[in-house]
Image (cartoon, rainbow, N blue to C red; front, side, top):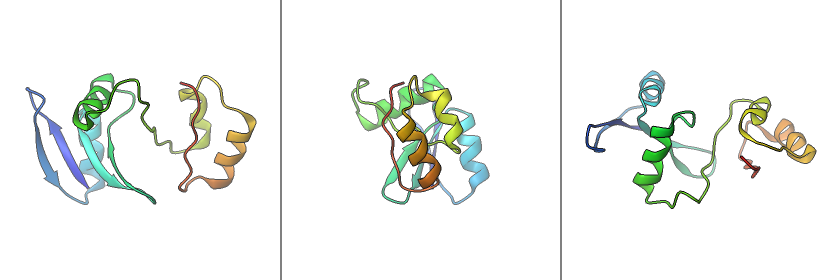
Amino acid sequence: MTASRPGGTGSAEPVVSTDVDLAARTLAQGGLVAFATETVYGLGADARRPDAVRRIFAVKGRPTDHPLIVHLADPAWMARWATEVPDTAWRLAEACWPGPLTLVVPR
C-alpha cells in the first residue's frame, strides 16, 4: 500500500507500507492510498470527504463527470450511496460480495 499525506499545496509525501492502521489514519486525514483489489490496483480516498474526492480527480487527471468506484463493506451500505438500487443489484451484491463485482447505480 502506498499512502499519500496531503500537503498544503496539494503535494503529497509518499509513504510505502503494509500497515492497515496507517492506511486508515491516512484516509481519515483526507489522504490517498494505493491498494490492490482482486482485479486492479486502485487509488482510494474516504468517499465521505469532498476534499479527498477532489484530490482523487486531480491526481488521476479525471474529468469530474466521470464517476468513481465506491468500495462498500456491506451490501446494506448501498442504500446510503445510491438513489435507486434495483432488486437485481441487491441479489448480486448479496451473492458475490466480498468479491470482484462492480455495480453501477445512480448516486
